[in-house]
Image (cartoon, rainbow, N blue to C red):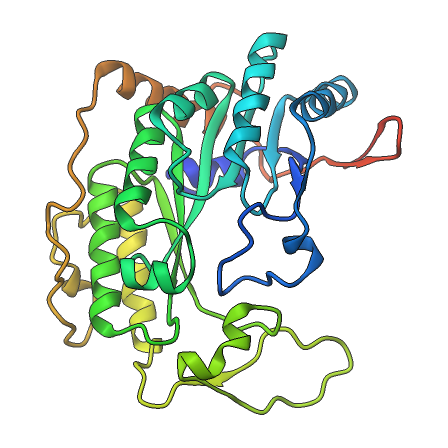
Length: 331
């Protein structure tokens, strides 16, 4: 019995994955909400493709597993391309997924290459999903670019998940509704397979914290702590209260993920009056789905869910620790 019929969620909950990182840090490290001043984000130090695939082969030999999760903050497209080509050159039969940025280097050709090397799914931050806020967040792409990337992966038969954000300083009710309209269109076009709304959290290591005055927010007092001070409360005088939007946003996306409500007016998901969406209803154009694309998508969904194999009651993750010459495996 599946916990969820959504193939992306089944990929996460019903499979086990060997965890590897392509690089230390993030090659972009500019997003205003991220802890960009920490070494774990700011210092970008990638491995080369030969090393990464060597790790994969060593892990496969020791565990008998061939499914990998590249745990990078944002997997570099050039390195992914090199790893994919080496996987194909070595004739490895593997499956993998990772987190990416919806940026211009993820072309249809690259999406196809990654799919042929075993890529089942990608996740990426679409965040507040309006052009003004994407620029304010320093994401480095706009809605049109993000849509092209999601379309490229969808047509290559790769599952796509979007991380969504609401409650960023200066975000208006209009922008929140427009973001939901975009998400509806992406699901309706089959460019998105799953998504989740996160409420913005302000952290002390982020550019947003250092730019509190420019964002018009006021840092609130926090009680002393003996452990760590990371997330900090803030107020936005005169700003929109994001809390009332939470239930409607999550209700809408839950239904979208199961193919429901894709033609409904997005205002219907809220229990209070909200503005009419200003985003054009045809902003996301429906794809020309070929039979090959549909077959690839169905194959990816089945593989992601592990259909045809013995069902697992719980998720098991093999943790690998490199000791300098080999991997130590823990259950």
